[in-house]
Image (cartoon, rainbow, N blue to C red; front, side, top):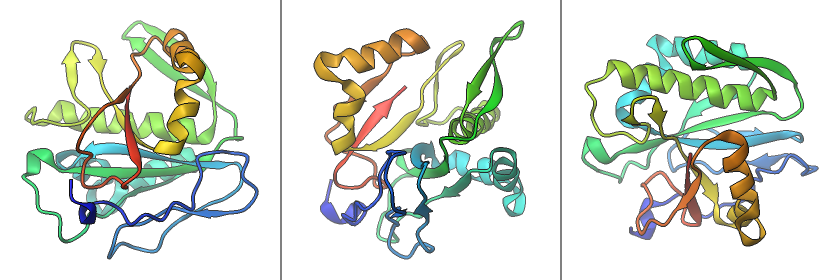
Length: 211
């Protein structure tokens, strides 16, 4: 992919909750003012097909505001550069979620209609789950066009995240031990995708992680 289709290479933010000073999330050209990541907060970048974005935002931003009030996390659909022109089926947008890692709360997840389990999560974890649930709802109501959040078989869905390349090693762990542990504990398939072309909304040094 051409270099000018990526984010500018401004990598001043961190996904670590241990950094001591506020950091800046890089923004696309012509986008709104960048957000800051305060201490004990993290930034998650989730991919969402452009056809799902309107259903996530809601009329006059009503749904995304509700998600913000529900989780206390900042949630924003990032802009694409004006120069990017792709067929609608190929366009992905980044859902930027910034939330606290320290606010503990209870979250009930339903593995099936009759099987629910309660988990203790942070504010940012709850926000990621709530946003993903909403995208799934929109996808279920759509016409089934290609999307990054897609139903592969009944009950199985996939979510793709953009992760800075320097952080991927921590996800994988020495000899792949960390990612294997996460797979075992979560029951999910987790992999770093070996893709020659990242979506236009990615930064030049991003990797794509699929859960």
